[in-house]
Length: 167
Image (cartoon, rainbow, N blue to C red; front, side, top):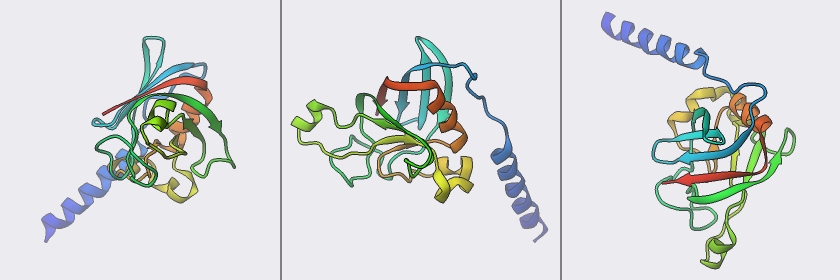
């Protein structure tokens, strides 16, 4: 019984350290001109030219394997896109968002549909999960980061920035 209590205490302490451990932040004057998302690694890399500025752990659509085909399939799309719009506080339900230009005109011709694919924060409903959201793919096809991370990314990104999403 004593070993179980120590184990539980160890798990709790590990979780607290993970939640509050500081992570690398973007510089205040950073400018992002390319975003690359690797779905299989659950990683998003942001670049200025060829210089890697930061890497973020992300959550994806609830059915992340494979390319998005239609609205409601809970898949995160794959391909080359751009930031179509920036949605700020009060406009995006997930804090701030970068609207991904999915589907492309070519994908529409192939019959793919869907809309509102975003790179977004957690918002008021999920805010308290913080970094723990990364352990579960929970979006409807979007790419989710913490609220602090979306604040950094949003500030450093302009409409038109390239987004590359790989399997």
